[in-house]
Length: 301
Length: 301
Image (cartoon, rainbow over all chains, first blue to last red; front, side):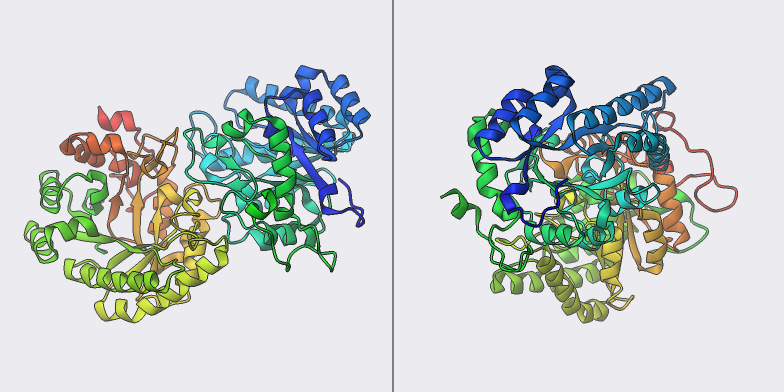
């Protein structure tokens, strides 16, 4: 996380690797360098393919920041063996985050326990698992970022469905170990979003953006759009995140089959061009919000 | 709404007409009679096809209760003419509900205003519209039921996404005019669901049930399942609704292309058989909750 007030808005742009999911670590890092994108968010499977040490060296030599590692979590298991494996995997993920030089491991906590409809049980399992990870996270200087996922993923991926719920969970643990992720795609619809961001304050460890587009595709995981192509009003969310004290990287993370199939340079160029919709370039008061927003068409033109 | 403590659980079953969407009013009423289902929830387009007076006569002669009329709402318009038309249509819907003998008009309030990403604007439009309808509802003895829809419908159908949000809106108006609908499909994932139901108390004007099944279909409106086929834990929700004081009909409302294509008698039989998963048949204390639940397979066998 960076916090210099001198940074201009593009200096805070991070490309989450999921946006260019077909690229290797090296290719994604090169893409960022080529497009003047100063940070990258990694995914563990890509890092594993490159090799952890090689991935860390690549990004360091390129001079990029690593804004986060995705992802830990999936804590909800009926089988004790599966539960133990998940805990071991999460501890490995924390160590990987530290090795890559990022202070944030994003958690997708898990859906209902297989064979069970007890959503309270799933929530308690997640709280227990995070508690077990706290000392490991502290030892590595990594914060766990609890991500609320959109409620359409509640049954199968994450029973934590609102930022406020993620925050209530995070607040049970030390602030240096557990925080929350604000991802516009998952939480934009929530009437309590802005007050919950304010309440989150220093607990915000990551701000991720992409747009809500319709119709949803057959695979609802892949229905995200470039910033500006959908229905989300970004400036109020950014303003709230900034007012809460978050001054770190802003990750553009888009799961979309068409974008994955597009030329990566085109994707990176669009990500860059659209970023002022999230974080305005010009702001006479050094704050986001309260100024006229460009439209997507103007930025692309 | 009925409130006799002597009713057994099947006496509170209502078949929402959307579950057998290909049937006319007469056919759906006959189906209920044939299967001993004592109440029906109507949809306006079916009622219009039958004729309002004819539909009212049909259901009255059959001796069924009308648990609700679906639906009013869709209040979010940029065009003043469209807004006026929506208000006129909602006033007509209130009168239709009264003519059909139901005290509940379900509202699906509307998504983002066309051309706008301002979700607060949409919410204010909805509040204004309901305020305008309150005296009309009171004059007809009909309560408007604000329904929170699942957040995946926030952009295009309903910006009110949580029961608590629906309730906060309802509480701005008199209790005899405005209440809330609890629909398991839309709100099951919410960590605040049970306390929000308790808080709703007498404001609950309808309890609708169907199950959350995966994967979501291409048309996400049609992804609902028979009670017991999915991931929702009904007894705690029913117990909370009962504890809040709601003793009215429980509507089974399922939008699902496969169920619409099934023989209606089969659908009605399944609805009946599965209903004990929502409202247990045997309960020594006269309360729901706290007793062993049957499984779907046992009820079907």
